[in-house]
Length: 276
Image 1 (cartoon, one colour):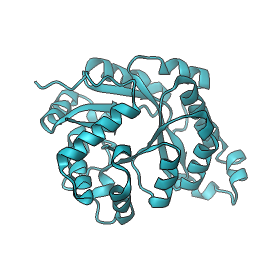
Image 2 (cartoon, one colour; image 1 turned 135 degrees about the vertical axis):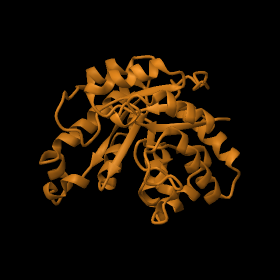
Image 3 (cartoon, rainbow, N blue to C red; image 1 turned 30 degrees about the horizontal axis):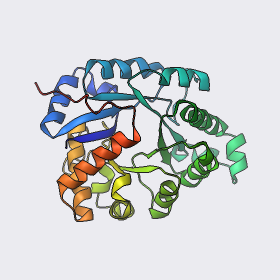
Image 4 (cartoon, rainbow, N blue to C red; image 1 turned 180 degrees about the vertical axis):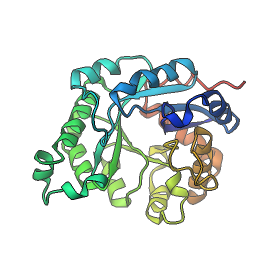
């Protein structure tokens, strides 16, 4: 069963005029489907155009936690955009404090109502959209794991599902995500020698809750580290995760692909990247 790249940014300028080439390379590396992620409201048409133009691409709708400037869609706008047949997920969304450490207050209430209130408000709108649309969430968290999980747990009764994308936390965070029905997705980070915590999680996550991704053009896995990442390279990440778990690459490939289409149930498994 071919692989799925569960998270990539093919609308970014890194790929302009190279889509045919990189998608052909993906096919040659047993990648049959990829989920293209929207990070700015203004870029949603470009993402959807890519998904309409290439068999095997799906799209998400959302505004990245660190995006500043541009239009801030309300929940109704997000829900309306999610109705497009090729939109299979909401996000990426979540919390990211990495670039705002100088603005962080000491307690959660201050973060929710102070300098970072806009991130929390945006996050809740995306959760509202997921609950109303029935689509899964794609969660980004950086330097904010506790607040991200607290927010998701507070809304767990709304029966939203989703994935912790580009997982870079420890097992305690993974356990919290798994407990509320979320999946865990591994990027090229899991291949880095410095990523012992992530490798530990990759060994322990239940096989039926595991996804793989590139986050292209970022975080190319070993042996492509330092290069522009692309969907074909998800095969390196999948092989490494299989080795960590002591299972065959084919077993990991089949499980991760089945998991993708179970979570992103609106995605059409019959739409596959085509050779040539």
